[in-house]
Image 1 (tube, rainbow, N blue to C red):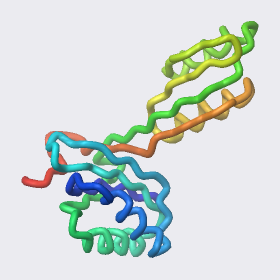
Image 2: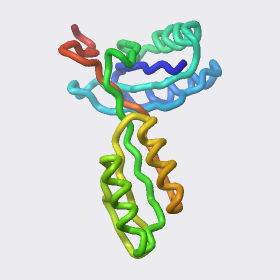
Image 3: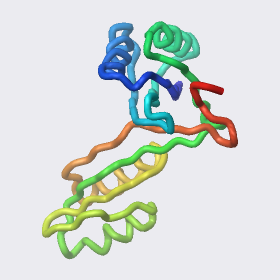
Length: 165
């Protein structure tokens, strides 16, 4: 089972490296990790997705909570949160097939963000399964390059994952 964690940390150099190093030393597999500023400039929010049962989840949370710069850890359950990823996909775009690619991109509500003589770059935001589905369809045209962010998530409703509640 995959677990998504929102980890609030002090915005200091090396915190992300310490977190990923701690988890890798303990042999926890990080499926994705994304970090960025929050509404509070001295706080960074790190979204981590780990695979494992509830025992693994408990261990990950206990290990992370031992780090000095970690302020708060919250599991983001799928029924109580909204999550997204961003993908950029560069595909071969022979002029005779460009309209086909544009139609596929429109079906997935993605965007063409760059076009040149040989390739197109498509931007897609959505859940991981939707990105996987677009990738599978675009493979037919020839994928040149692809990059994905890690998952980011926010809780639904008025509640928030904050340091000071």
